[in-house]
Length: 396
Ligand SMILES: Nc1ncnc2c1ncn2[C@@H]1O[C@H](COP(=O)(O)OP(=O)(O)OP(=O)(O)O)[C@@H](O)[C@H]1O
Image 1 (cartoon, protein in one colour):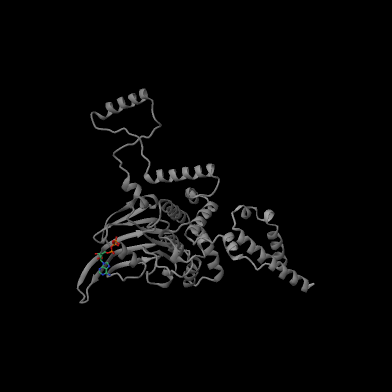
Image 2 (image 1 turned 90 degrees about the horizontal axis):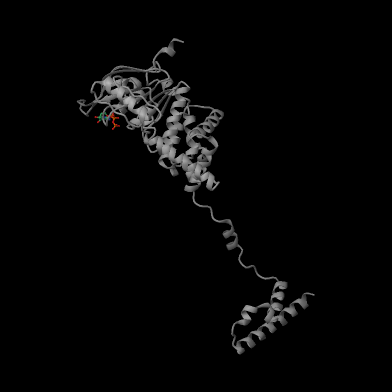
C-alpha cells in the first residue's frame, strides 16, 4: 500500500500566530517549521517553556488551525474525523471524571470511539492489566493518586488502539518504578509498530525511549536527528574493560602516553545511572523481604515491573492501603452480642450457684463483705428463688 510509505506526520512551513482581540499578532508560537515523523518512530518533542511544543501538539490533534504552512497527520488533515479515530492522546493533566470508576472511565472513552460492548470489555481488561491497574478497576478515579490517574490516562489514550500516540509528559507524577514501566510500555508499543510523539522535560526519559528528537526554541526547530547521531562523541573513544591488574594498567597507560603525545586522557570507572541504582536497591529490598518474612510486603514493589501476577499483588496492596480499613469482624460480633435476657433455666442455675456461695464465687467470697449486707442479699436471693420455684411450679 502506497499510503503506508507516507510519513505519519508531515509539517511544511508550519506556523501558528496567536492574535489579540483586534487581530494584531500577539505571539508567534510556531514559526515556519518543517518536520516529518515516520511510521513506528518514537520521537521526543523537546524545548524549554514557551518554545511551542503544546501549540504544535494541538495542531497535530486538530485542536488549533495553523496560521500558515501545511500539516498532514496519517496522510490526512488533522481535523478529519478519520484521523482523530486513529490518534491517542494523553494530555499533561489527565481530565478524568472523578466519580467514575477506572473501568467506567475506560468504558466511557471506548464508547466515544463507538467500540462495541464486547470490544470495550476486552480492551478494558487488557489495558488495565497493561498499566497495572486491574485491581483498582472498581475504584473511583477521584480517589486515585496522581500516578494511578496517570496510568488510567495512559490506558484511556490507548482504548481506540491508535496508530499514532501523542503523550504529553507521560511520566509526570509517577515514581521511578512507574516511569520505568511507562517507558517499557512505550517501547512495547514501538515494537507493535505504533508511532509515538512524547513531550517531556525529563530528558533522561526521552533518551531512554526515543529514536529521534526535535528540539524547539522560540517556535523554531533548533536541532533534530537520531539520538545516536546527536549524542555520540565521534572524536573520542571509550574502552570499557573488567578491572585490570596494576601491571596491565601500567602497560595500557604507557601505550596511551606514547600515542597521545602529551594530550590529556582520563581513566575512570564507569558509573551507573541513579535510576539503575534505585531500581537495583528496590529489587534487593524486595528479595530480602521475601526471604525474611515470606509475605507480600511494601518492599516488593520492584516485582510489578516484570511479573504480571506480582504486579497485581502490589496494586492490591496499594488499593488496600488507601481503602478505609475494614472493621474488625470479631469486634463487631462481640459488640453486637449484648448480654441476652437469661432464660428461666439460666436464672435458676445462676441462683443455685449463687446460693452455694463459697464454691460458685470464690473470688467474691474472699472479699470482705459487711455481714448485714450479706444477710440482705441472702434474703433477696431466697425471695427470688421462691418466686422462681412458684414460676416453675406453675409452668409444670
Ligand atoms: N492561546 C494562546 N494565546 C496567546 N498566546 C499563546 C496561546 N497559547 C500559547 N501561546 C504562546 O505561544 C508560545 C508557545 O506556547 P506553548 O504553550 O506552545 O509552549 P510550550 O513549549 O508548550 O511550553 P511549556 O513547556 O511551558 O508547556 C508562548 O509564548 C505562549 O505564551
